[in-house]
Length: 149
Ligand code: 8DG
Ligand code: MG
Ligand code: MG
Image (cartoon, rainbow, N blue to C red; front, side, top):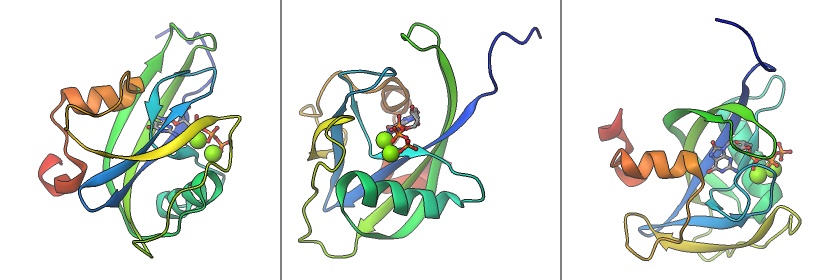
């Protein structure tokens, strides 16, 4: 196949679980602007998926998570975006260390703010970031991730 762009990048998205809810925020980015997405970011050199999930959630929301585990992966090609790109996205999930801890919007240039939403609920905010919409369309449930593999 002809190579038309840079190598795909690795993203990590994190389902932060609280009761039956997960954390979403409206993106401010050249990819998926104004869509609702999970906290997450780019895998850094030498990092494990768990380390990346822990670090990005802390950097973006201030939340401390544990029991971090892999749930699924997507191959997302964004050709129609202002900055065309290709991501392999590793989806992880984790639980709050302190169930009373609330998220803070620590990168307001990248996100309008964080809130808890029931997954699969019709109240889930729209539009979702494309890789998340793909998961919804697959019937994916982050709370029952073993059954999705
Ligand atoms: P960084 O500088 O902190 O490493 O990066 P970031 O600015 O936080 O990156 P990001 O765009 O939030 O995440 C990196 C990529 O991961 C994103 O461009 C595409 C991919 N990605 C998905 N789904 C999701 C998702 O639900 N949330 C986040 N944050 N990223 C996702 O494919
Ligand atoms: Mg980040
Ligand atoms: Mg991010």
